[in-house]
Image 1 (cartoon, rainbow, N blue to C red):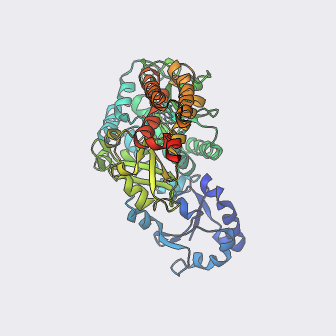
Image 2 (image 1 turned 90 degrees about the horizontal axis):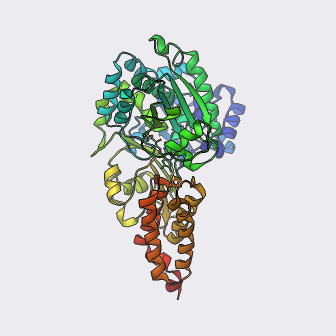
Image 3 (image 1 turned 30 degrees about the horizontal axis):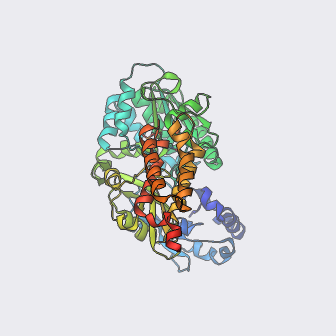
Length: 509
Ligand SMILES: Cc1cc2nc3c(=O)[nH]c(=O)nc-3n(C[C@H](O)[C@H](O)[C@H](O)COP(=O)(O)O)c2cc1C
Ligand code: SF4
């Protein structure tokens, strides 16, 4: 019988280490194995214990509650106030379909045998038996789209790199995860880092690259430690190196750290940074797939995208493609946070409505007040009003309402939110994080804050509102990258859906 407890940063931040120490002190035989988290953050620290082929969960557990829990851990079928039952059944009852996150929270990340016992290397072994083109075809047929933000078809990107002539092709994993309200990359890197490494190896074999980089944000020290250990384990067991799983391919990965800059998540800026330059956005074309890192054909993919690939190869493209909605195939790792009762990571097939995610999975607002606005897709995503939340989670459906899926982050606000303040924040964020290369973004975002201040102060409200809209249009049309090109969306959506918030004096008078 084994006891499990996450070492995930979020679980640790609310006492998982203390709970682990308390359990070990109470009974060394129950000393927990440390895993990633399931994503059920309202239940963390979540202690699980084997019971037959099930894992019975108890949470949220405090160190003080441990003495009263020990007997229940020894006999998990007995009742206990913190007992939540079989955790996998709970996830399934929520409508979750754990495809990408199938091992997350179950597997011990530093244990190669446990990784293999949970299906690790199955996808890579399949890929090693296939022609390069067949691997790319499988990824294309799965319908997988990039989870970094733009939702670009992954198979098409790989095909471009496979077809490119240049030597020294490279796989780059974008682990900069800068969007507000997102943490799926972090959870995967902390909880199942070998899935990412396996996905990168498959990408390398598919397009003919022998070298990969993970570009990791410096704010993730636990992910860094987890990845470094996993890279060693992968090399030791032949998942990386000169002869990948004995099949004659070479592939290895280097971990590089970012320096805390949001724009370095944008792929060309990331490549500049990776080459040792200042993180400034490049002109496109050429696309990174044609001329990327050091001018070589480069696959740049997000952590979730790459970590999904092994499962697609293992289960077959069809297994993934049958899930989902419209042109959004497979599952989305929704990261739900903000003013919500049950924040967390929920992997659901595309097509679930945003309202269901917030109400059924999230349990509504933490404050108990009405939802007023939701920002999906990170800091550049539009604010959706409560009346628009019946939208299915799918790239096209959300875009029709002015929103976006982005990296799958959903931030909930209740009816006390000041949307003029949020609009101003969008432009402040844009200004702070601008790489400075183009004028509409660098200067426009600063001017926009000033104009919002004037509107809110009641100064020539009508003409300043028209000016703000014009400025937003200039940024949309004239910015070099999506940072300046999309920052106006939260502002315009706030103006369109919540005009009264910009009219505080009139409302107050
Ligand atoms: C301002 C900005 C920030 C971005 N930040 C990230 C990020 O933190 N992580 C990420 O994977 N993609 C980010 N992207 C998207 C990347 O440019 C790129 O599209 C992505 O890494 C490609 O991988 P995918 O096809 O797997 O999504 C950002 C894009 C922009 C415009
Ligand atoms: S839009 Fe902003 S972040 Fe993007 S290239 Fe221009 S200045 Fe840089």
